[in-house]
Length: 177
Length: 129
Image (cartoon, rainbow over all chains, first blue to last red; front, side, top):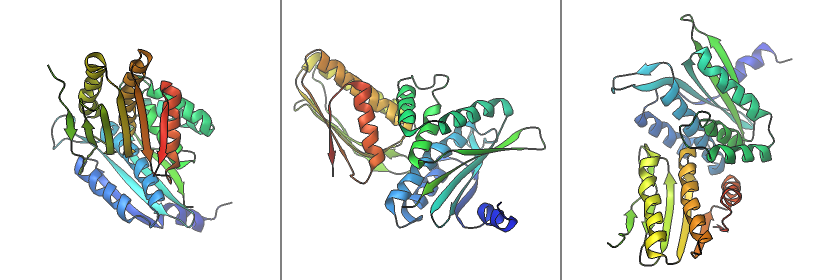
């Protein structure tokens, strides 16, 4: 059993990069540079974290329920991102507000992705890639890419908010060689 | 009317624009750098249209060279569209060579290229650097 001390260490210590706020283009660019250039001395690992960041951060920009509308239009999504550095892996997590109706299909997709072998996942990615962009279900490809890049399962959690909506957390580990 | 070359210099700013060099005279078309764009479809549509026009009007051999070190998933759809145009051209008797250069440490990229071959039925020369 994991001790309370271990849980605390796993969830709140060892933060390499963290950000909470609007996920607009400028912020994405700053965070991307930080990950690409300074996260670790291993370019291969940095690139993997970077690729995962691009896909998951874009999901926050596009789909977070909480919007910053100062830039006009539908605004940009607000959310949070944390990268933790452990001995043998990095843990990359994002979180954003959502509704239960919107997030249940996403969680089902994660379960589906986690149940697949690498070969099956590649097949699934090919299938999704052949579907026109924007078509229902077409958004899967980012999550498939995250699982393939990380070579680890996608973990997720839902926290109920006081306003009746939910905070959705998605997390993946990226092994160090 | 003559088909004009497409030359785009890549950049690595808020978004990453790939370098493009499509030459109507030589048939050498190169796509390199990184691809993560604000509007991916808007960027790639003229490239796809250009290739279609080349295959319909110029009908000479094409050497398609990809040297992308990174592309996001929405770009991956547009790459598939480009390769499908090349496959159609080949099926109609056009001469097509596709060379895809990749960093030999990037095994994910190698898998990706293999999957494009399965998807399109095109022979892609996978060249590590």
